[in-house]
Amino acid sequence: MGHRELSEARPDITTLTTGAELRRWYWRKEELVAHAKRLKLKSTGGKFDILDRIAQFLDTGEVAAPATPKPKSKFDWHSAPLSPETIITDSYRNSQNVRRFFKSQLGDSFKFNIEFMAWMKANVGLTLADACAEYRAMKTREADPNFQSQIAHHNQFNQYTRDFLAAHPEASLEDVRTYWALKIQQPSETGRHEYHPDDLKLR
Image (cartoon, rainbow, N blue to C red):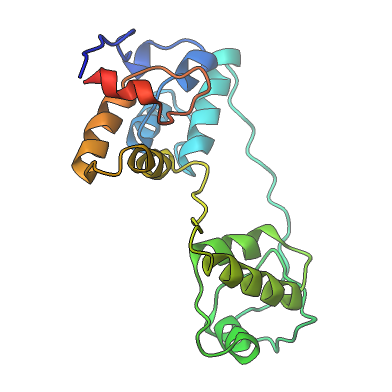
Protein backbone atom coordinates (compact mmCIF):
# COMPACT_ATOMS: atom_id res chain seq x y z
CA MET A 1 0.00 0.00 0.00
CA GLY A 2 1.40 3.38 -0.94
CA HIS A 3 2.08 6.02 1.66
CA ARG A 4 0.72 9.51 1.19
CA GLU A 5 1.93 12.43 3.23
CA LEU A 6 -0.78 14.49 4.86
CA SER A 7 -1.41 17.49 2.63
CA GLU A 8 -1.83 19.79 5.62
CA ALA A 9 -1.21 19.36 9.30
CA ARG A 10 -4.37 19.53 11.37
CA PRO A 11 -4.28 22.92 13.07
CA ASP A 12 -4.73 23.76 16.71
CA ILE A 13 -8.35 24.90 16.97
CA THR A 14 -7.26 28.01 18.87
CA THR A 15 -5.28 29.25 15.84
CA LEU A 16 -8.24 29.35 13.45
CA THR A 17 -9.61 32.75 12.52
CA THR A 18 -12.49 32.02 10.12
CA GLY A 19 -15.60 29.89 10.20
CA ALA A 20 -14.73 28.41 6.79
CA GLU A 21 -11.39 27.12 8.07
CA LEU A 22 -13.01 25.73 11.21
CA ARG A 23 -15.51 23.77 9.12
CA ARG A 24 -12.79 22.15 6.97
CA TRP A 25 -11.64 19.98 9.85
CA TYR A 26 -13.18 17.25 11.96
CA TRP A 27 -13.62 18.23 15.61
CA ARG A 28 -14.77 16.10 18.50
CA LYS A 29 -17.54 17.62 20.53
CA GLU A 30 -15.33 17.99 23.59
CA GLU A 31 -12.87 20.08 21.54
CA LEU A 32 -15.67 22.39 20.42
CA VAL A 33 -17.08 22.68 23.94
CA ALA A 34 -13.67 23.61 25.35
CA HIS A 35 -13.08 26.20 22.60
CA ALA A 36 -16.55 27.70 23.04
CA LYS A 37 -15.82 28.14 26.76
CA ARG A 38 -12.45 29.68 25.90
CA LEU A 39 -14.25 32.21 23.69
CA LYS A 40 -16.90 32.74 26.39
CA LEU A 41 -19.63 31.38 24.12
CA LYS A 42 -22.51 29.13 25.08
CA SER A 43 -21.10 25.60 25.12
CA THR A 44 -24.24 23.50 25.50
CA GLY A 45 -26.32 21.86 22.78
CA GLY A 46 -25.50 19.56 19.91
CA LYS A 47 -22.04 19.35 18.38
CA PHE A 48 -23.03 21.17 15.20
CA ASP A 49 -24.90 23.88 17.12
CA ILE A 50 -21.67 24.62 18.99
CA LEU A 51 -19.64 24.54 15.76
CA ASP A 52 -22.06 27.02 14.13
CA ARG A 53 -21.81 29.28 17.19
CA ILE A 54 -18.01 29.35 17.06
CA ALA A 55 -17.95 29.83 13.27
CA GLN A 56 -20.29 32.82 13.50
CA PHE A 57 -18.16 34.35 16.23
CA LEU A 58 -14.95 33.89 14.22
CA ASP A 59 -16.52 35.49 11.14
CA THR A 60 -18.40 38.36 12.77
CA GLY A 61 -17.15 38.76 16.32
CA GLU A 62 -20.78 38.54 17.33
CA VAL A 63 -22.38 36.12 19.74
CA ALA A 64 -25.52 34.52 18.30
CA ALA A 65 -28.61 35.71 20.12
CA PRO A 66 -30.34 32.89 21.96
CA ALA A 67 -33.38 31.63 20.11
CA THR A 68 -36.65 32.78 21.60
CA PRO A 69 -38.30 29.66 22.96
CA LYS A 70 -41.60 28.91 21.26
CA PRO A 71 -44.53 27.96 23.45
CA LYS A 72 -44.99 24.20 23.44
CA SER A 73 -48.24 22.31 23.27
CA LYS A 74 -49.59 21.31 26.68
CA PHE A 75 -50.84 17.98 25.35
CA ASP A 76 -49.81 15.28 27.84
CA TRP A 77 -48.47 12.26 25.97
CA HIS A 78 -48.10 10.37 29.24
CA SER A 79 -51.77 10.25 30.13
CA ALA A 80 -54.06 11.76 27.47
CA PRO A 81 -56.45 9.43 25.61
CA LEU A 82 -55.01 8.64 22.17
CA SER A 83 -56.75 7.79 18.91
CA PRO A 84 -55.73 7.54 15.25
CA GLU A 85 -56.95 11.13 14.85
CA THR A 86 -54.67 12.50 17.60
CA ILE A 87 -52.38 15.19 16.20
CA ILE A 88 -48.63 14.84 16.81
CA THR A 89 -47.60 17.92 18.80
CA ASP A 90 -44.25 19.56 19.51
CA SER A 91 -44.50 18.21 23.06
CA TYR A 92 -44.45 14.61 21.80
CA ARG A 93 -42.82 12.00 24.05
CA ASN A 94 -42.18 8.27 23.54
CA SER A 95 -44.20 7.39 26.63
CA GLN A 96 -45.68 4.12 27.86
CA ASN A 97 -49.08 5.59 26.97
CA VAL A 98 -47.94 6.03 23.36
CA ARG A 99 -46.38 2.55 23.32
CA ARG A 100 -49.70 1.01 24.44
CA PHE A 101 -51.54 2.90 21.69
CA PHE A 102 -49.17 1.73 18.95
CA LYS A 103 -49.32 -1.87 20.19
CA SER A 104 -53.12 -1.70 20.03
CA GLN A 105 -52.90 -0.50 16.42
CA LEU A 106 -49.82 -2.33 15.13
CA GLY A 107 -49.64 -5.47 17.26
CA ASP A 108 -47.54 -6.60 20.20
CA SER A 109 -44.41 -6.72 18.05
CA PHE A 110 -44.33 -2.90 17.93
CA LYS A 111 -41.07 -1.40 19.19
CA PHE A 112 -39.76 2.14 19.11
CA ASN A 113 -36.66 2.44 16.93
CA ILE A 114 -34.42 5.37 16.13
CA GLU A 115 -35.83 5.96 12.64
CA PHE A 116 -39.44 5.93 13.83
CA MET A 117 -38.75 8.16 16.83
CA ALA A 118 -37.01 10.65 14.53
CA TRP A 119 -40.01 10.53 12.17
CA MET A 120 -42.37 11.35 15.05
CA LYS A 121 -40.26 14.35 16.09
CA ALA A 122 -40.05 15.61 12.50
CA ASN A 123 -43.75 15.32 11.66
CA VAL A 124 -45.57 17.61 14.05
CA GLY A 125 -49.04 18.27 12.65
CA LEU A 126 -49.64 14.81 11.23
CA THR A 127 -51.79 12.24 13.02
CA LEU A 128 -51.11 8.98 14.81
CA ALA A 129 -52.86 7.27 11.88
CA ASP A 130 -50.13 8.74 9.64
CA ALA A 131 -47.54 7.45 12.12
CA CYS A 132 -49.00 3.94 11.97
CA ALA A 133 -48.89 4.02 8.17
CA GLU A 134 -45.26 5.15 8.26
CA TYR A 135 -44.31 2.42 10.75
CA ARG A 136 -45.84 -0.23 8.48
CA ALA A 137 -43.95 1.26 5.51
CA MET A 138 -40.70 1.12 7.50
CA LYS A 139 -41.29 -2.54 8.33
CA THR A 140 -41.95 -3.29 4.65
CA ARG A 141 -38.66 -1.61 3.70
CA GLU A 142 -36.81 -3.55 6.41
CA ALA A 143 -38.08 -6.84 4.95
CA ASP A 144 -36.17 -6.13 1.72
CA PRO A 145 -32.93 -8.20 1.76
CA ASN A 146 -31.06 -5.15 0.42
CA PHE A 147 -32.42 -2.81 3.08
CA GLN A 148 -29.99 -0.51 4.88
CA SER A 149 -31.10 1.63 7.77
CA GLN A 150 -30.65 5.37 7.44
CA ILE A 151 -27.65 6.86 9.19
CA ALA A 152 -28.11 10.30 10.71
CA HIS A 153 -26.34 12.97 8.64
CA HIS A 154 -24.20 14.07 11.58
CA ASN A 155 -22.93 10.53 12.32
CA GLN A 156 -19.98 10.59 9.95
CA PHE A 157 -18.10 7.68 11.56
CA ASN A 158 -21.01 5.25 11.12
CA GLN A 159 -21.43 6.29 7.48
CA TYR A 160 -17.68 5.97 6.90
CA THR A 161 -17.73 2.50 8.47
CA ARG A 162 -20.58 1.33 6.22
CA ASP A 163 -18.98 2.71 3.06
CA PHE A 164 -15.50 1.40 3.92
CA LEU A 165 -16.75 -2.12 4.63
CA ALA A 166 -18.89 -2.09 1.48
CA ALA A 167 -15.75 -1.33 -0.54
CA HIS A 168 -13.55 -3.72 1.46
CA PRO A 169 -15.68 -6.60 2.82
CA GLU A 170 -12.56 -8.36 4.08
CA ALA A 171 -11.61 -5.42 6.31
CA SER A 172 -12.06 -5.46 10.07
CA LEU A 173 -13.50 -2.75 12.32
CA GLU A 174 -9.95 -2.17 13.53
CA ASP A 175 -8.99 -1.37 9.92
CA VAL A 176 -11.88 1.07 9.68
CA ARG A 177 -10.86 2.83 12.90
CA THR A 178 -7.26 3.07 11.71
CA TYR A 179 -8.21 4.75 8.43
CA TRP A 180 -10.85 6.92 10.10
CA ALA A 181 -8.24 8.24 12.53
CA LEU A 182 -6.06 9.18 9.54
CA LYS A 183 -8.99 10.55 7.55
CA ILE A 184 -10.07 13.04 10.19
CA GLN A 185 -6.58 14.52 10.23
CA GLN A 186 -7.29 15.68 6.67
CA PRO A 187 -9.15 18.87 5.73
CA SER A 188 -12.45 18.59 3.85
CA GLU A 189 -13.80 21.32 1.61
CA THR A 190 -17.34 20.13 2.30
CA GLY A 191 -16.89 19.86 6.05
CA ARG A 192 -17.70 16.15 5.86
CA HIS A 193 -15.27 13.24 6.06
CA GLU A 194 -16.51 10.55 3.70
CA TYR A 195 -14.89 7.35 2.45
CA HIS A 196 -12.83 7.61 -0.74
CA PRO A 197 -10.74 4.84 -2.37
CA ASP A 198 -7.66 7.04 -1.99
CA ASP A 199 -7.99 6.73 1.79
CA LEU A 200 -5.95 3.53 1.52
CA LYS A 201 -2.97 5.68 0.53
CA LEU A 202 -3.09 7.50 3.84
CA ARG A 203 -1.37 4.63 5.59
